[in-house]
Length: 220
Image (cartoon, rainbow, N blue to C red; front, side):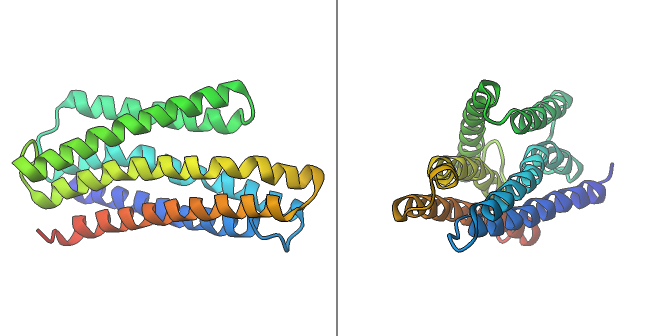
């Protein structure tokens, strides 16, 4: 496909990524609000978790699509093997996402979540190192704006990890509210976890926005 076609798909992934994440953001705000009944909060939370599938899929697809766009624009030579590897990674990652969602609360989901967490840590490190080395030594990428995008994309992986880490403390006190009723301590724990998660989500928004801006205006 042409560079315009890959660029269009790339833009669509950003749109669905950010758009869906805003829905998750709003759902989290409702879920932490003690003015609503637990049933309402649970329903909103479940809707948010379903919506959260879409940005995760976009995240998985942005890498192979970005490679195709890079190759089509002749920004960097991409071997066929790398294209194949990128698509295998993306498809496998999406399969893991759906498997985790279908097995919530089961050991399989927990084990796959740990595997996904480790994968994101490694990918984040790889892209960050490539970006930093390219900015410092013009290798393997000799265009500063493109190197900066790669660096920020590496940070996106870590921001996504931070979101998962910040959200984990939410589940226990939230379920305790449903089982035993609301208390100031439980509500405070729920609110603190959601607030920390929203900070991580906001960081992700800033990174994605900056990546898109740099790719469009190429400021340096």
